[in-house]
Image (cartoon, rainbow, N blue to C red):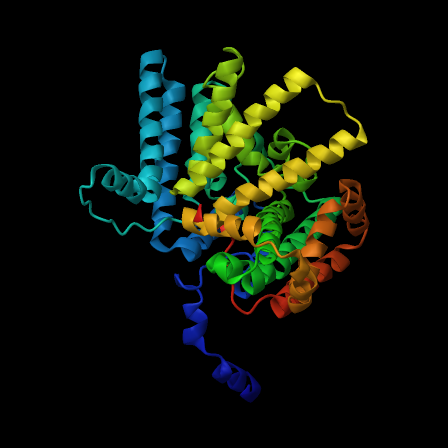
Length: 496
C-alpha cells in the first residue's frame, strides 16, 4: 500500500489531465508519443468489445471525435455540423420523387459544403486579390483553418453526389454515417474514402486475419519511419533552411534542397497514408491505397495515377468527367484537364503558388496526351528512361512553387540553381550534411524497391504469431519515440 501511495504521489495528475485538452502548440497527430500510447489503450478496449459490434462503432466514433478535438480544438463541432447536415440532405434527396427538388437539395448541399470550405480556406485569399485589383483596402479576417476540412468536405460531398446519382443508397442510421465521416485514421489527411468502398463494411463484423495483421504492422512501421525519421529529419536539418533563405546557399545546395523536398513530402504524405491504412486494417477496415511509388513514373499521366490516388480519382470522377471529360472533342478534353488540375492546385491552398503548381501539371498533362496521340512513342527501355528523367525533374521543378510559399522565394531558388550552380561544391556540401543526404538516399532507395518485395515482407510478418506481431508494433513505436526529432512536426497535408 505504501508503494502504491508513493507511485501515485509521483504522478503529475494536472499534467496528465492536461494531455487530454486541446493545445494549438501540440495537436495530437500519429507521430506524437501521447497518441501512440493512447492508441495502445484504445486497441485494448476495442478488442474487449469484439462481441458487441454496435458498441464498437460508437466507441470508435467517440474516439474519432476526441482525436479531431485534440487536432483542431472546438472545430470538431464543425465536423459534427457537417455530419448532421449531409446525413439529412442525402436522405431528403433519396426520398424525393421530384427531379427539380432533388437538384435544389443537391445545390443547397453543395452551397453548404463549398461555402464552409470557402469561408475557412479562401476568404482572405479573395479579399487580398480584390484589394490588389482595385486598390481598395479590405479587412483581414482572423480565420483559422480547421485541420482536415478539405478532406472530410470532399468525402461528404462525394457521398451526397453518389446518392443523387443513385449509385449508392443513403445510410438510415446517423451513427453509421457519423462513423463513416469521422473515422479517425483517415480523417485529417486522407485517403479520401469513397462511400461506395467504405459503407458496405460498416454493418459487417470486422475481421482481422493474421495476414492482415502482418500487413498492418508493416504499413504502420513503414509510415512511422518515413514520417518521423526520414521526413522530419531532412526537413529540420536541411530543406527548411534552404527554402527559408535560398540566397544564402549556392545553386547546388538549392538543387539538393529541391530533391530533398521531393523526398520529404513523399515520405510525409505517403507515411501518413500508410499509417492510416495500417491502423484502419488493425480495426478490421480496408482503405484504398493512396501512393504507388510515384517517382517511378515514366510520364506525368502515370504520376497522377500513382500520387495521391484518392484525390486524383476524386477530381476525375467529380470534376473532370462532369466537365465533359474526353467526350466533347480534343480541345475540350485538354481544357478540362487543365481546369481540373488548376482547381486541384487551389484545393491544396489559398495561394497563387498552388494555383501555378496545378496549372503547370494541368498544362503538361494536356501536352503529354497530345504528344502520345501524335507521335505514339515506343515502349523500349530508352524511351522509359527518358520519360522517367523528364517526369521526375518536372515534378521536382513544380515542387519549388508548392514549397516556396511565395513567388519571391521560388524565383530565388530557381535563380540560384540556374546562375550559381557550383557543382564543384557537391562533395563539400554532402560531407557537411552527411546524415541528411544518407536519409535522402535511403528514402529514394526504399522508394525504388519493387512492390513485390513489400508484399513478401508483409507475408513474412503475416505468418508470425499474434504475440510476435504485437511486440513488433510496440518496438516500432518505442523506437520512433526514441529516434524521432525532438520537435514534433505536423504532417504537411494538415494545412490543406
